[in-house]
Amino acid sequence: MSMFVFSVPDISCDHCKMRISKALEAAGVKEFEVSVEDKRVTAEGADASYIQAVIEDSGYDATLV
Image (cartoon, rainbow, N blue to C red; front, side):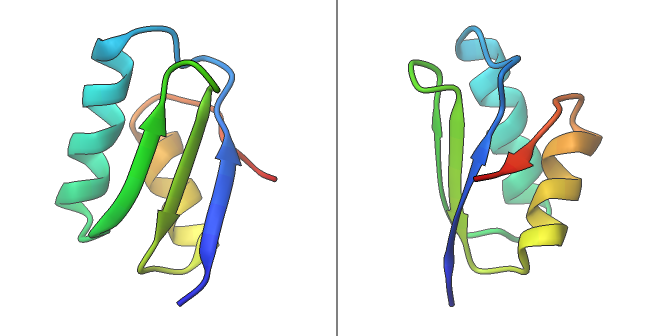
């Protein structure tokens, strides 16, 4: 599977990281990293559009980089 990187400019704290992480886990995305410092989510294990939708459904705008 491909690794996808998303810019998520509204990530600002550990609460944001936890919220996105829980959403990705619940959606079955097994491999991911949420970086507060870089304002990015790196993920694999699902289609890019699906991962993006999960991030956006958790309340954050996401753009595939």
